[in-house]
Length: 364
Image 1 (tube, rainbow, N blue to C red):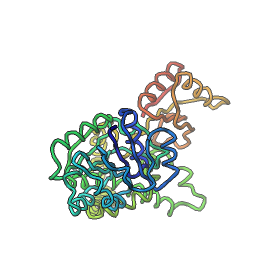
Image 2: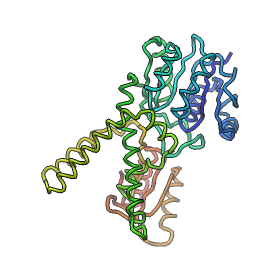
Image 3: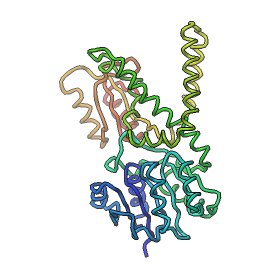
Image 4: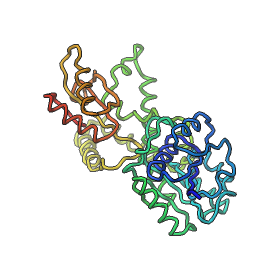
């Protein structure tokens, strides 16, 4: 009998894991349930899944891994339906970015020996199966939160499985996970959404802020385009941590306001200098929940066919362009043209190729 993996939910993360499994373990049978029938049809058409389940049924017996990939509030509800399908060899896991709530439900149901929480720290501002891809997990930290009762053998096996999908497993307890991700992931999304809301609500009548917004503002607020449903669930489930973290952040903003109002030049300089140094010490070698943009900027002459010439050069080099456009506000960027790519290798190759053709290139 083929080894089997089951998925409850086949959105961006579930779909990406399923595609990675299909790529690295083509012999596995993949069973998936999703409320969206179009998603199941597409995954079947692409040969990513073998069985499309319209309900959680007996297709989920004898799974080596059972992935809960629905929104965090739904995952806890689905747990009850999965209890009957668990056996000794099964590892039950989830992919939610809040862990404590599901751990408490696992304890309540008495299924701790099967459960290892999981959080692949990868994602996109775009959601849904249509935006999933096998490489999403590559070099991304994948946090594992095993219960106290799950065996070391299962934890080791799951860590090795995650590693085989090209992710980087890291072990944490669920409470530490929720505090850490609350600070580095959940808080930035709240800040981005709030900042966009501030600009929207205080913009001029002719929307000058919206028209001129670029550079730092667009980079900082890109994640505000993420799924509102997902972030609604995350904020509610991690509300205690997030409330405390927001209190600390608000206090830091108040301090900044007071120092700026008093014209404290030394403190202001130290704020930006220490932040710059710390930010520059953060490695770009692994992906996280806020995805890095791979882009180059270059100068072009304002003439007909200028962009087309660059697009042709890159196409001849086999480089796929994710996005391309003129930068009208260059307060924070050098270069007239911004070209974004899907991966770092393409970014580096494009820069090298354009420089060969005498273009002045600025890499981010």
